[in-house]
Length: 105
Image (cartoon, rainbow, N blue to C red; front, side):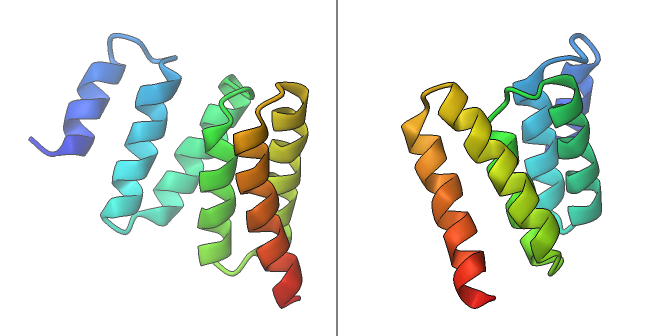
């Protein structure tokens, strides 16, 4: 059984488990299924908009598809949320990712 299958099996008991949903997206990314990873993380953000780690990963996935405007918007949304939650570590990571894109533009 693949890790993707294992995580899907675990999600059957709790479809709203944000951590498992995020882990599923990461596994799809690992096997090159970035479109599926993006779909999963976008769904995660809709059901749990406070899951901060999702913003960094989703932005990075969009960067990988050369969708820089989309990535910057995701990072900005994450920065705003991190600021509201007083999560300076995540805010700094998102700001750095955003600055790197802006520097290239």
